[in-house]
Length: 419
Image (cartoon, rainbow, N blue to C red):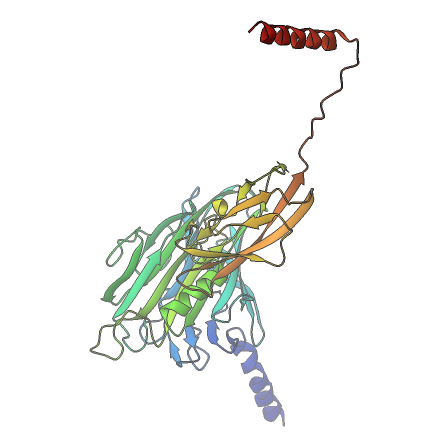
C-alpha cells in the first residue's frame, strides 16, 4: 500500500513537471513555449516551435532547435541567453503558467532584469500569436537594456533551403539584424551573419538561414521597465502573411518561406506556408498595411461661390510606410456627408457655397490598390463659418460726404453741357 501510494504520488507529480512547458494554440497556429520564454519545449509532444495547423508544418523544428533570446546590460557588460539548442546562461525561470491558448514565462536575468514573455492569440488576426515582452530593471542601479531574439527557418517543403526576408523599419532601437538564426541571441556576442547583416532583404536565398534582431532600449532606472511585442505566425502564402503583418502592425519583421513548391519548380508566392517573425512597439513606423490618420481642419469660411479646400486627408496617411497617394490607395467617403462638403479622390476636403455653418465630424476610408482588403478609416473634424456680409451704411442728407457727392455730381453735369 505504501509503495502504491508512493507510485500514485509520482504519477501525479509528473504532469506538474510537464506543465512547466506548454503547447498553446488558437485554431490556426500552435506555439510551443518553454518555461524561460523561448520556443520548442522538448518535454512535450508534438515538438513545436511555430506550427501552421492548415499545412501541419512547423517552421522551426525540422532541423536544430534554434530559437533563442538574450538580454544584456551594456553598462556593466553583463549578459544572459537561453534557448533549446544554445543552452542557458545567466537566465533562471521564476514562474510559468499556461492555459490552452496562453502562456506566461517570467525569468530572472543575472539578478539585474526580470523578463516576462506573455503569449496570447492576436485579437487582430488568427495568423499571429502575440508575445508581450516586459524587461524590468530589478537592480539598484541604472542599466542600458539590450535584447536579442533569433530563429532558424526550416520551412516545409524545402527545409534547410528557404527564402528569408528581413525588413528593419525605422526604429532607432533596432541596432542590429542578420539572417543568422543559429545565433545564441546574446546581445554582447558578435554576429557576422550568414549572407547579410543590417540590410533590408527580400527573398534572400535559397539558403539554410533565418533571422536575428537586436535592440537597445536605452537607460532604464531601478524599478523601471520597457515593453514591446513580438509576433510569431504563419499563413498559406506571402500575400496572406503580409496581410497578417498589416493587422498586427509590424514595425520590423522577417518572413521564412519555401524556395520551391513543388520541388524543382522555383516559386516565390510562399505556398503552402509562409512563416512570420515580427516586432511592434519598438518606436518605429508600421511597415505593412494602410494607416489612415484622423484630421482636424482649421476653421473655414464658407465661400459665396465655388469651393475652398479645408484640408488634404491623405497628407498624413500611409500605405506600407509610404505616403498615401491616388496611385496606392482608393479613397471613399463613409456615411452621409453634409450638403456642400465633399472629398476628392486625391484627398482634398472641399467646402462649397451650399455648406451650412457649423461643426462637423465626417469619416472616410482608404484601401490599398494592391490588396483591396487592406483598408483603414479615419475622421475629419471641420468647422464652417458664414462669410461676413458688409452692408453699405446710408449717408444722412446734409452730411459733408453727401454734400461733396452732390457737388461732384453737379460738376459732372455742367461739364456735359459745356461739351
